View (spheres, each protein chain N blue to C red):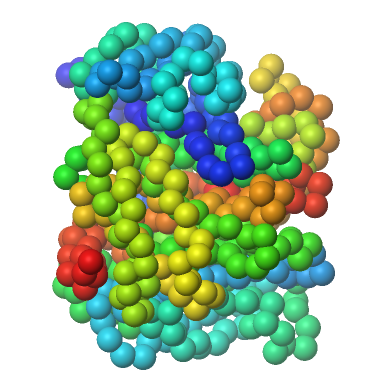
Length: 261
Length: 261
């Protein structure tokens, strides 16, 4: 089963709501108390702390402020539910022993809260293979006075390392390279999409040849007065049935060849 | 091994001959989600038109067909739209519908069919699927709120593709309904049969806070308002829809946030 990160973004603090009940009534799950754990990286190891027990049919809201003293500054905070407590330290991300469902997947509410409002999405994260890559087209940029746009690249891998990778941002039509920025594994990488010359007709394309991520697009108006958040689908979602991952491979190969640094 | 067999037997009545998405009969079909549109003095809806064939490297001028359904699931408008290749193209639904003398309702569903199927997708025996990005503007806010498509609902012959369940299923929305918020829950019937749907808001002591039963016609969307819940609660949707995943509109006074369940 999945981990549930606590998000971060400009002008906001993260808050994640976990649910110890199944999203459906027909995939068999154990109706039992589960342990809420916090997992993070420190000294090149995964550390896990049991926060509390969560009764079946109950929920738990964990705010970043609740756990900020427990983790190193800037570390990715991962929450989880499991039937057993996680090992205090491990060299690989612990595999969670818990009930899971597929239709739909069990999710948590991942939220960002500013001084004025909140935005959320229903999400989860599973570890990506370290040799995977990212291709995302972003039609989410919003414009106007006081509007800022960011992409939050959220990565999780099994090994407790902070791999440095390069993220490239292009204009899809002109193929012009707009920005190169470093990002790190096991992190929510906040990348500004402001002041890059994109306008309402631009379709930004963001790639990382060395690391996969969940790309979350975040917009803020007047320092958090209004917020907007959504993620793009992986390219495999452009098709259904047949060889979807063949389609994903093809579209990635095409764009990685087209876009040159 | 016996345990596994028992689990499979218990699951069989829920999965045998009940696909989440049926494969279209025609291998050259294209597929779309049934997105929710809302247009009135408080609402407008936008759709991010991506030229999917161009993303797969197919050059040339491409088109999409867009088909609108009213709040009863009846088709009332359709048109073709030229795509802008690798430029961003935002479809303003109010403008598209403003050519009509009068709207039949102020909400409904719509679908988008790409007319060009990349050869590579045909070779992989896959189907192009539009599950893209809708944004809603509420009370002329300077930021729109985005939500992605989710279901492979309908093909370009307007055949609905979602399977039907033999037994009633529960979709337990893993989201905390809060006391100081107002919600509107949009649920679309993407199957070809009428579906009885029971919405129930319960608190975490199993007290029923609200109930509503409706019948949804194919392609119809129902919008359930939820307000003044006396305790934090959760939404349960009971129906023979296999994946009754709603779109949730959450209101914080004049601010609106939309996301998928």
